[in-house]
Image 1 (spheres, helix red, strand yellow):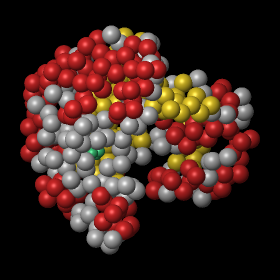
Image 2 (cartoon, rainbow, N blue to C red):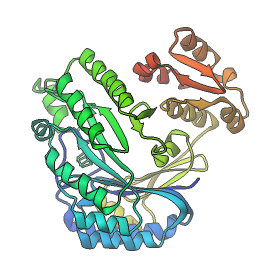
Image 3 (spheres, rainbow, N blue to C red):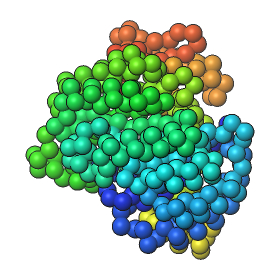
Image 4 (spheres, helix red, strand yellow):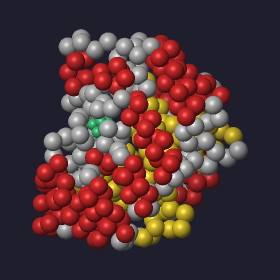
Length: 371
Ligand code: SF4
């Protein structure tokens, strides 16, 4: 399995909760950025890929001409026959023409940032679109022929009620999305929400309500025919995101573009965040890697467990042995005993996974797997 991530760091506006490496008001740099990306793709994306993911930022913030250029870059990248090719898109930047172009360059999975179906909430969290914009894009995408569409949803938003959130989920189920990702709001440093929160100007639902929101997510999506395959991800049959599974199973991937991370042959690499610096480094040195960390076996074991426990089926005990030539019980015996006795962790059918109760306190459990 070979995977490629391509980062497009441009957004129309910065959402109030977002700490991703994405920037607004940088449109003047897009052309130069794409030129640099083309050079980096030529030198680093040489495999034949089974999954490609163009994320951001907002890749659909590019103009039609720029998407065409992105298509030229992609045309030099080899894809396997069944390659899952995802591109992220945000309502407010998507048009039917752009959707057609995406289809033409081979995108077969669309991932849309919706976050809520409530227009007041969307405005309050700094999104540039209304629910109606999403609906229009969604219907256009279906018309253009997209058969695999994800929407991102958020809960625990300021002023969000349980009822309102339940309505959001039900609307998405009725639409027939293929995949839904549901994340709770986390107040991250450096965001507008962080500032408001620290000045007591942001009223968040209390913890109990947030837990209920997560429970509702599980219940409603299960009733709606989605199966949970990761803590925050739900899909119709055979519509799991293969690209993200590569991350959670600690398999190799290459990331290109500013801020992009790679994991290859037990090494973690990371490109510079700053767009200008990225362009400069690619043009002068041919790469923009600012950090190389060689994972020790211990690091790899930790990451394999830590990431793998995010998946509902957990990690394969045999795979752990194959990779590290050590029995998982010999490394993590005490932690495994502790949590299996508390019924938060289970071993069955050759896999180790979190129980339903374990998932609710997953962060706490996972931190215990750090060696
Ligand atoms: S559109 Fe996405 S990447 Fe851009 S600011 Fe909003 S959340 Fe962040």
